[in-house]
Image (tube, rainbow, N blue to C red):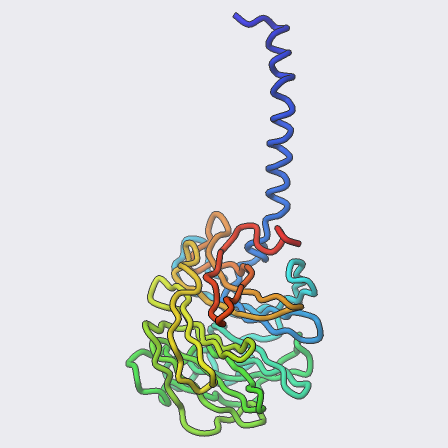
Length: 325
């Protein structure tokens, strides 16, 4: 039997290892960077770079614990100058700010043009069955925003390719090099239109983009000489993408960019360049204990391009960007 003196000596020998394990655990906690917001559930991220600041716009998941339904009554906005430290600002927009809408702060995106900031949103229409796309405007990326048009840009009766009432969701917008703006959106079918210079009116007919196993969440961006159309693929959703030399296509399917995001059935992405690096912004359901498909959380990891312009598959991490800060 070990005497007290031997036991004490052995404990002293173990002490450095215990200290190292404790320090390692504390360090791991310090460098955990995903999700980037932990005091609220955030979903459907969109990001915009303006004057050396990233503005992150997200929906607010408010479903009570254990309830499997979407409850989203407002959009949230955060800003950062380094992609790791995020400041929350007052909610600048709610569905009730559109007199013609009844609710549902679904996916959205903000873009700047000529000093104005245009916020394209998906909401439930008050008099036309189904989801609709509207636009708000502000003089500042933090708002206040107000309805720019007084009516929806797109309503469910304008798209007849599916029998569902939610195919007009997830707007994404891009201004091409020649100044022409395009609005993409869709669920089960991807659509796009040209926008007039005022950024609120449709300019020409609705066009379709046929993509393999398109579910929803299109995001269009340009990098070097390539256009990229990424989107939620299959269900539970992965992110896949296609590439083109022109914003109007033809689009060549390139495969999966991001796997299923943890325990979230949906997957919704934003892709930006900031200070010489590329980033993939998405959501998962990783906040314990009630995170999941209806209580999601925004995360960020690096995105890398291959020499031929294709994108490398995203590596989703717990450490996020703080590990390399």
